[in-house]
Amino acid sequence: MSVFMDLNLIYTGDRTGLRTLLETAAHLGFSTVAINYVFEPTSKKKQEIPTPTPINELIDHLPVVQGRSRPIRVLNRLTVVMSDSSHFRPNATEYRSFDLLAVQPTTEKLFHAACMLYDVDIICISVSEKLPFFFKRAPVNGAADRGVVFEVSYSAAIRDSTLRRYTIANAINLMESCKGRNVILSSAAEKALELRGPYDVTNLGLLFGLSDGDAKEAVCSTCRSVLLHAETRKTASGIIYTMRSCSDSAGQEGAPGDPEHGDPPAAKRHKLVLTQ
Amino acid sequence: MRPRLVSDVSSVGRYLLCEVIVSDRSRLLLLDDRAIAIAVKATVARIHGDYGAALCSVGFSVKYLNAHTGIVFLRMPKRCYKLLWSALPFITSIETRGEKIQCFLNCLHVGGTIRTCQKFLIRYNTQQLHRMLPKCKNEEEKQQVSQALLNCTLVGGTDEAFEDELRSEEDEEECLPNMP
Image (cartoon, rainbow over all chains, first blue to last red):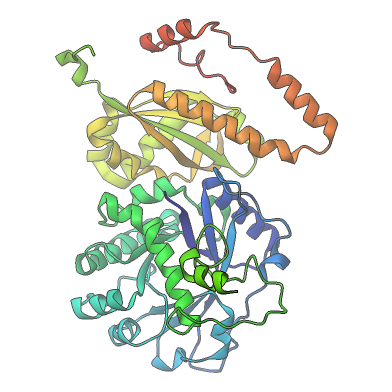
């Protein structure tokens, strides 16, 4: 049972472009995608954190996933590119409106902090430069214990030969310390033609130093655990979750736990149903 | 089962069933086997260098292309198909008849024989039909499509003739109808 996910589609203002992107992703067989809003603070002036556009405003009719009868699930994700520790503000209310939260540290110190301290779901590995530091075992293992995963995106590698070298070098560098676990592969695609099918991505994992099994996990089960981790961020240890009952947010904004049903995992809520 | 002769072993391959995805479907008709083979070989050489190019020159071929649906069968030697496959995602365009078609290959299935790929393809195409049918604009169009489907018959006739044809692995295009 494999459900493929691509947790990084770059948000562009272009509605039709985004629609074709979602349609292509559904055609390729991705059942869950996340629209990524990149936020890059500069030290000069304070910038606004982007607010996610609701999915039903972006696209009125969600395409049906290849091989399934459900429409594709679309989540929102924020990526904060950090070059200074003040850029990530824990407890910022703006972060709450996103389903997934990611950081992209640029220095070793920030990488260490992101692995051990920050309450995030994903740590992005830069693809536009050769990272100036090695991944040490301690922070990488710490991240694995906390359920934070590392993300390698491949569309830059498709675009350009130099970026391909950086991507592969950084990815292999990472795989040496994390031994292939807690890694997800995602596209970071802006255009529909930069996406790749799930089997191709799995095989591409071989170039990034992943074994067959790990590469498969990097597009299915690790992504699922990211979604579950994102849910625990919103809730009290993943047990109690409060929401306003008047809102009609059943489909998209519901807990991003189960990739297939759109509603929370059966095991967690089952008892509640019985007692009602 | 018939034991394999030694000479068979050298020809063991893997068949990759790929779909060419383009933004404008009408441009698919420009494609031909040679253009795809050239694009794949060039990309493998770009990604894996001389070693890849050498592997690609033995036992790699484009077995089948359906320009209407954009389906391609690629044959690769079994011992290095993963290496060759890992170069396929880096294809961004195929040059044919002086034009560059922006596209990418999406692998749908990997099979040990053409036959398993063909079975998969038939199932896949049926599935595509079910995906497309709700897009019909009105009831009349739907009727027309289903009528056209019912009128389809296999050229090969009975199932047995069909299998014989496959064993010889000669005339693959005959045995690849769009619908079951």
